[in-house]
Length: 493
Ligand SMILES: [Mn+2]
Image 1 (cartoon, rainbow, N blue to C red):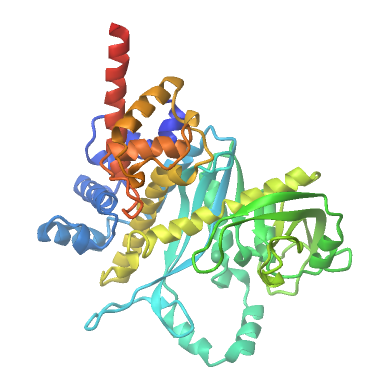
Image 2: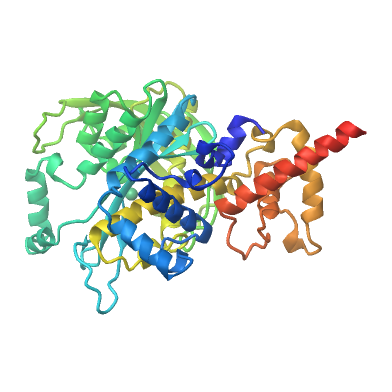
């Protein structure tokens, strides 16, 4: 297996101390006290083993639970170091890649207080005053293979409850007016600019990066600040904006000639839509956005030059029963210059990678680490637990990516000779029923990763939880020794 293969399997996460093993494998920071470092690594390891961040569930005994509680309460175990350590490791991993996508998004984390809880300091996350925290992570992903390279930055905060109560009385119009009079630096949406620039600053300037974000990042001053920092971006448009050359973004884009049609695969969203392949028309053009009337501290440019891409699904056989509003329509804005339809399609393909950050959110919440079930009493403790959850979920994402990426070939990761070994191991592992057969096409990376997971002790039933990183690691170790035996046997014959 080559270096890229090791990386893909997330072994980088464990490679910092070579093969000696031990707590350093799970290091999450250097906190100025060896005991804290060790305890923090232990906590991270338990999170990976148990696939949960709820202290009671992941601790081996009461003493450990108490120790982890103390760790989270300790000021030396700082949120800042947790973030910086993760970012540093990601930056090191990004070196050598040509183009890295920085996916970012905001999510809310809801923490319901159990009866009798004295938990303080959480903020409102919805209008009806559910309490929790807000989080905004930036995930680094290789643009060519979509392999997850790690967290480039993350911010976790609680909104102010007093503000919320004050603002509730002003009504929707009042709120709109107030926001219009508030400079971006004083708004929550400033996090888009701040985290984008923080993530970008982490990664070496030799590596090309593009910030990819959903409609929430359609903010004039986000475009302005990023362009001034020479950052590249892809954002899905949320507003029909006025253009400098007269006219409006949406109509100007539709008026552009349809450059090409291509087929795009839409994965299913449970409860919302079934997976389907869609033939879409691709349009693109250069646009000059006109500066909207906003309050500012730093004067934004009069106009901003961007490239706009439209991915439009016209009525056709196979979609007539889908209401027009549910058909695919993406309008993307980007700093990347576009002169061919293929480049426009590439922008759309980069935007599609954004679903990985949704995946990260799922891994944090009910489908994964159950962060929201935590009963941690203090806000600071909960923030640090959330950061640990992001670090852990990112690692899980790296290690389990292969199963979904069935279009990737095993030879991306494994050597030629690996194939016959993997095949032999696979045959020996497959059970008699179809449920126990490797469901992936031979030679795909997903197929190889199924074998590794089975070697690591995963039972291989669809109904079972997907194999976690610890399982994958055990599997790889077993595989390596099987391979050594195989090579030895071949040398003897
Ligand atoms: Mn969003």
